[in-house]
Amino acid sequence: MQNAGIAALGLDWRYLAFDVPPDQLKPAIEGAKALRFVGLNLTVPHKLPAVDLVDVLDESARTWGAVNTLRFEARTTGGEWRPIPAFGDDVPDEVRAVGFNTDASGLLQALREDLRFEPLGSRVVLLGAGGAGRVAALKLAAERVAELFLINRTREKAEALAADISSRYPKVKVEIGYPTSPSVDLVLNATSLGLKRTDPLPLELNRLSWDRVYAVYDMIYRPAQTRLLEAARGAGCRVANGLGMLLYQGTQALELWSGRPAPVELMRRVLRQNVYGA
Image 1 (tube, helix red, strand yellow):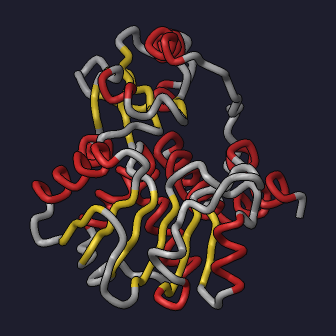
Image 2 (cartoon, helix red, strand yellow):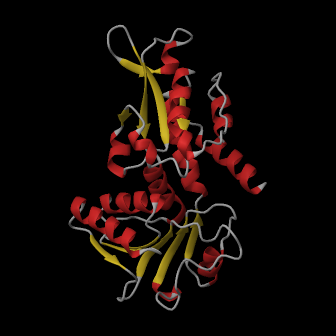
Image 3 (cartoon, helix red, strand yellow):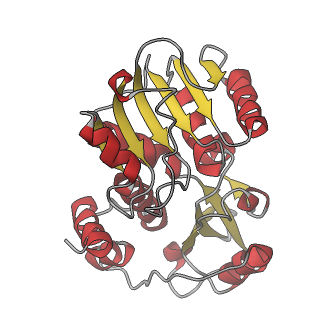
């Protein structure tokens, strides 16, 4: 996806994947900085630790408390920080790492496009209060959902997230556990349950039946149809997987690095072909 976008923009760059153990994240970021990389994407489990390892946090990373995109910048002789590509082959010595979060806005864009979901005034059940769930919950609260119901394996983590949301967005009603009143507009799975066919459903159907759910979004995109989505689709719910979120967090990252609009439809087509073979 990224290499297709890079080629379409005519950039002499290459997007590569590296396995970095958690205890090597700091030297990996420093190494990329020293090598004058344009930027990095970070995935689990690096998004939360990176908050304390970059030089500057963009407002998006400060707000959501996680970093998934880094952009390396150098200081001009006049003291202005500019992205590395602006300097060509003559990059100044002083370089910094700026952390961004494109996951939150990517998720919202995907929800709107794939499910025609609007957060304002809605009731949402969020499955999982870990890194991905936390970012999703805070973004939905910022977009003024009416109610958030947090479901997590360990209640303490859900309670901590609920407290954070309540302190930031006091008008949003947050509860731990399943709703007891009628319907919800969205069930969002931010857990890893569904990656394997043998995984149990992340939703307890004896606590929330399908006839009370309008739409279901699963952040998992491989397999394309998790057991959760299959069950929800069979019950008549609108469903979507996490491919759209993956696409939009990636296109936004490319725009941060290049300063140019990403070729979204090309990147969508290449992504679908790579993930699903069609």
